[in-house]
Image (cartoon, rainbow, N blue to C red; front, side):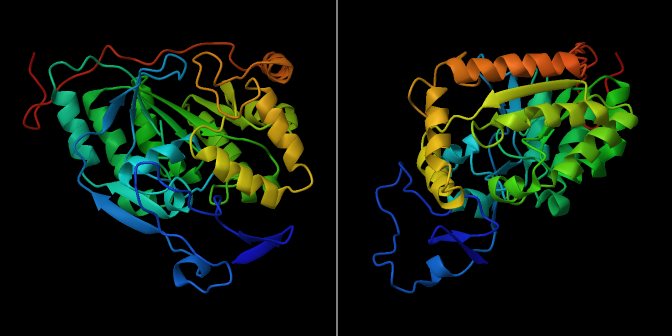
Length: 357
């Protein structure tokens, strides 16, 4: 469905409104004349799934400010379509665009469970937390059919390897049973990404995600089931959702979340142009202000690659966000305790049998 914002063509249900050129490709497919009628451009694009036999699954994270050591992503690209998503750039490595392609051409790693088993059987693997959704959401819509994420959780339980989850989808509740089993051995922690409580904002910012109410329900349901939970109030976008922080953290705490984190939006690579196009089409009245505030958090740029600064920004506005976040976390009892996951019970399984000794 096409809607109009400030006389601009806007496709409802998608975050990105165009496909920027892939920097790794020499050629590109473009519409030469805006008045031309091209099927590929005018018709609403349906999601396409590309089934891939990948060679690897687990990635070692070398960035010191990410907060995870290893990640595993059963899907590349993400149908949720969050306009700000830093993972958009990674879609270019698959030969696609970081724009509409990222949210409409989803690579499905069918052999992910077999790859994880092989990884755990490697004698050089020393148990550590593996984060699902380190790049794209492991509970995006196709997971309902494929159940790859559930199989990965079952393997983590089988090998007693700890796992962390970050998702915007309420589908995680489907796997409450396996999460409870993991939790019996202190092997799991589940975080929900909650950027606001404003549903009108969510529909354009994160068009195909679960409602904020559903994400709070995830926190409430899993917390009542004894599963440790937290939220990421991220990214904070100055002028759009930074003033929503108080209500988000309050609601999360009341739902049972024990921990919270945040990041300030940064628009690296192709994301800058994609986000700016979206911003000026969607929030014409405040677009320039928002863009300038983002720049103020990154020394005059919207992209910041400096470790230690890129996630939280710097400058007066970023400092204000940091101070408010600390105050609200204290007020609502968040981040008061730590609970390292269990890495001591890892076990290898050969030929389907546990070792006797």
